Amino acid sequence: MQLRRAAKWWRTNRRSVPEAVAEDFEHAVKLLAFEPGIGTPTESERYPDLRRFQIDRVRHHVFYRVSKGKLVVLAFWGSEREFGPTL
Image (spheres, rainbow, N blue to C red):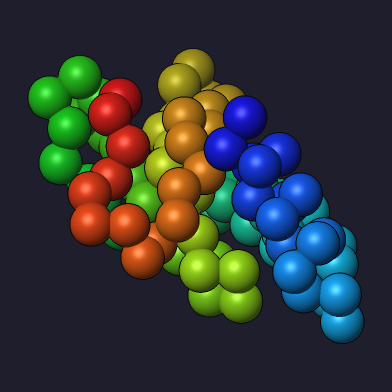
């Protein structure tokens, strides 16, 4: 939901690079699957292994963890928001 909303907004308001959100998210997920430790550890009572990865161009974070050897994306969140997602 968060990803679709951001991608739609970007296509409407950033016409010079309308697919930036989709492209950057896809690149980030591939990178994180290959090297999951590059994200910043983030405090979470529910997920002690939660990490955050900044996607600079579109100013969003990917909140994720690794479970049973697989990357699990929990949220795609605007980095300019005052608070992170409730996970």
